[in-house]
Length: 383
Image (cartoon, rainbow, N blue to C red):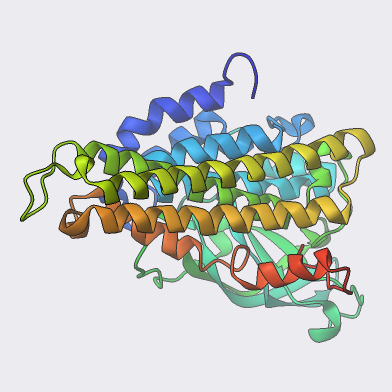
């Protein structure tokens, strides 16, 4: 971003000290506390990708990713909840205007859910009837509306025959929230399973995943999956920066057992900090370079070519992997200090390694982008 910081960015920075102070509380609760979610909504985090015409902020991807990165420096789980609310609401750009206005009639509306097509949507008069159970329902305890992915119609018996997975949007009151989120990291995201049981969803609340947006603006040239994936890179970079900062703060005051020199005076510490810094800054540069290039294409031509979508995914995966490597270095250098629950390093370590398990930054994404670099025929449905 250039010039004065936006109000959402100012809010993200202002929230940092409180998020750090409440990180243990958030993790123990296994969800984002309601008061913080309400403040995230008031700050505009959940409106970042909502079309302006519906009362949203419709911000450029770079600005949003920088906000998520800043939040992640304070607490990874909180940043995750912010990005889920923002990216989930971007679906409103693909829905009929009347539907979008109803869903977002309050500027503090929170949309969450899971796009993986794990549900069945059977044809019914005026809509579909949906049954299924979904994992990774991040932020759902605070949601007003819930997104759920359903398998293509030919696999579910829907007579209308759409060939793509579809998303349905339902009021949160119709969703059963299941207590399954007992995990090693990012516990505060509340990414628990949820279920729908033969819920009727009217046609205006059903959209094909990847369908052309109704709102034709540059932001919506970015596929929803691309915005989701990009956010993982931002959070990983924020976690890495937090780990480096934590190690630097620790190193000046810690003298390792059996040594007369502080940790900062040891050559190994110096080289590891330098390598972590270089790795994170290089990955961050590639990441934002890819975002800026894709944004230029979206603003100029209204579409993002495959080569730029490839670079977005590659840069995001690299940012996540390089960030995890940097956190690992800082965790190792800190020695025994990093294993105590009072140390933020152990939480950054656990959080970043849960993040790297996400399918959008998992090793197969390198195969996908590698095939494209090699000019091989490639399935682009998840790009």
